[in-house]
Length: 383
Image (cartoon, rainbow, N blue to C red; front, side):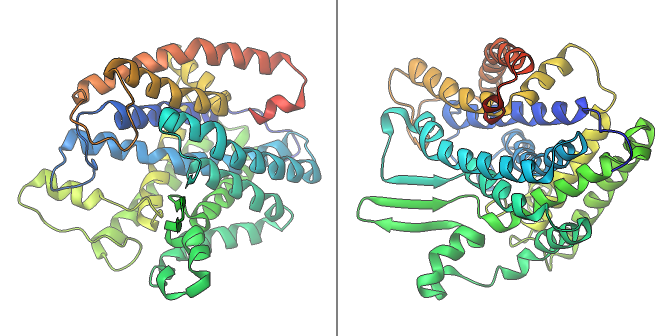
């Protein structure tokens, strides 16, 4: 960090808001699409459906990265490490509580099952914050080394399986493998977001925050953009090399299919649960290029996305029940997340509903952003 306090970068809020909007697209598709199958299943998907799902892969990595970036920028603006550590710890716990209460209710509504616990993105974000609360007290080189080793090396652990670990098996499912953790007796826990790789991404975000806070980067937008483009290009190049070699970094091999479109989809079909190295290189590479582009993007749509990006938790807690309740009203009954009934609308209709949902959310988010900007209440930082 240089001698001046870091200014707020609208491009970070813009990137965050952009992926918040993409997240709403993914969840709108969950509840509204007539295609009741995995959109990455190459046997049945279409290029448009695959691409719609793939672009939403950006969401979770960007959330995790910017958790770390925002943490460092708080230090750069004058917060002490002790205060930041306390905030990360308490906000992490708060996110985990929200995952199991408000968010769970939004997902399931009348299908609410008190014995079912899905360990989703807020769970991983919360634990990443809790771990980051301790990591920030280490030297920057140590944080960078630990985070890089986690992100690059975690696929070396793929050969370790929960079923072979006895009583430690459920812990390994939570930490790395994912999948069922506990099942039986009316109680089920499923880890969709294993913690180890996501913690590494949050740590790298903290390092990115330190880079962006340097005087020579902060004060020179052109230099900042070149740096981000360089990082993004390097990550995408690493993705291409790893994918072509097909020996490490992605459990799912790709293969030449009967047509070009399916072959391309096979090449870009990467694992999110847990996130493979290839998945993280591809998504974070694109994110860095977007961040560089957003550094100079201005206009009405940019302001809308910046607003979303400044109140991400408020947006997150609203958008799930919005698209769910709307689907129930349109359907005339419960539209469950895992519904396999034949009702639904084509992909173009999903996009139309998504745009309508964002339009409805914008005035609410703008109002709340104004409330946060005027208030001195510390608790508003938690929502």
